Length: 447
Image (tube, rainbow, N blue to C red):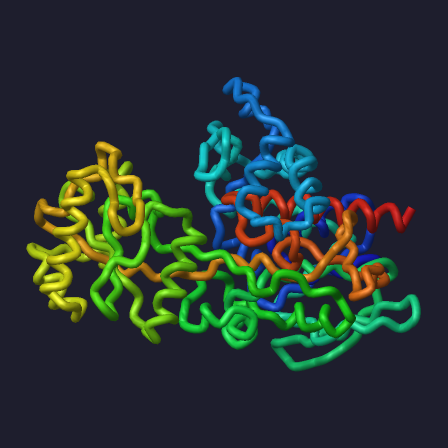
């Protein structure tokens, strides 16, 4: 079959773009290098922040595009390209409507998440499967859409007006070329698993893990850079943790290099991750710090399931004394007792004398009630804000800010939508919105 469109990647953005094109009678080829569909999207919750949804209206929640844009912009530190961020905000409901029209299901509730001024996050009924399965099932049943798994794009070249895509069958090693009539869409995700590439961009990430898909490398990004695409924000990466961040304010975080507090524990995840990694770097340490709680702090966890989850995984360990914690983590027991005493005195006085942590909250109490609990606070990488630059139609721009003929990029392959950090649950929104934007531009070219 001759194809109008080649979509590289079968995660949320690629699936939306491919389905929109196929439903508009274009012949579509989806290429996925893994043995299964979904990419990193299949590992995500795929919660989706939407402005103006029916759920908001039912709950009488006042929200608008300006409020949503302001919430996103607070985390960008001015590094986002506002035209792209506005596209996300202005089309969030359009993206939701497309998902609902194609069988995706959400719970009958709306979530208020950290960083959002109002509740606007929709929760998939059964996790990522509630979103990806309907999209993939439709694609698999369309006669004008072919899907190749375990196939890798080795190269994309431009020959006058022709785009030549070189593909390798990872099962038998065969290599062949495909020449789409209209476009190649890079829906290839981020590069959080590409340790060598990401460390060049951000040396702080050299020793941290990622829970993204095993395919989350920079291979496709390098192809785009080879086409003279403009790289943007490649050093910006989003930190995550293996525990709900709201619990950490009940702890003190202690360096294992010198047994000292070094930060305010009640900060945003991006700042927390950055401060931990810069502290380790400054001390030439590969040991992640520990968070220490007492029984009072544990009792303040919003959800009892959190304690069960963390202890059952042995992430959070129980100790009868601070001395046991010091012994287990090989830190100085005398210094640990000293910093806990200083902290406890500050809590009683209502002022954190060292790091200005907000401790006049009635829930913040001295660390003095055994048993004690401790866990490593190890940042993970779950998202890379960097990628290639695109215009308002998801067309990739070269270093002269001109469109690279027939080349599109969407989802995490793109930089500039979020800036320094990303507001929670907006990556799903971005994937859907820009998947549709790219598809609509491609469809208009066919017409």
